[in-house]
Image 1: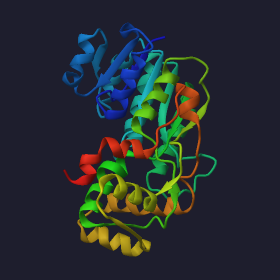
Image 2: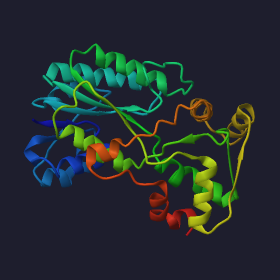
Image 3: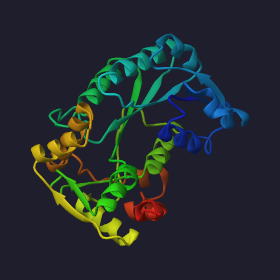
Image 4: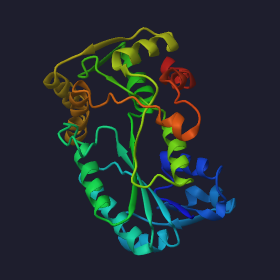
Length: 294
């Protein structure tokens, strides 16, 4: 079984590659990236590293050649990524790949397509493309990455002394990106996952009010929390210069969280990896200096 990991210089894919290499020989791994030099360390350890670019579909069949299983990490650019995903899926078919493992999103459920999050339609369209591809597919519906609030949202909020959003104390099962990588590697390196969907979440449900309180405790700096109506939050983001598409994504996330779309809580990490998912507080401890403004 030869495993190809696309977008392998990205954080999730790279961490997944490291976990996969704990389970299989370097000869059985192909890393595909636009930036081959970034993966020189892997190449030096015997891993095949190939150039491949989602925006240059002609580059992808050769990049995936010889792979039986492909790890397809969802891309981030709204409006472009469905085309990019289609390019990767078509290339996988052309290259003879048999099985794709796709990182979907916890809020993207084909059985409940009405989630208001603006990132969900692209995932659902990708599900449709995968289901029509004729390939075996495994969906990893990733939970809310804990790294986003811990490293991006909370530090400036702590500096201001207040976190303002529109989530209304709603809760989500925030998960470490590293736990997602370990779960993905477990699926990629073993059999029996074809046709399965796994919800990959953290071990607890937390709201941004809970996250703020945890951050204040760990950083030793006081920070409050306030939820405001959607239109007020949107106006604040607009005044801060946040681009329209990003602003819409942020506001719609709060709407979706309030509607309960972030709440599935699972033990998937433990079942796939043999160890429990780690709490958000562990990640905050690791980034204590960042939260404390040091």
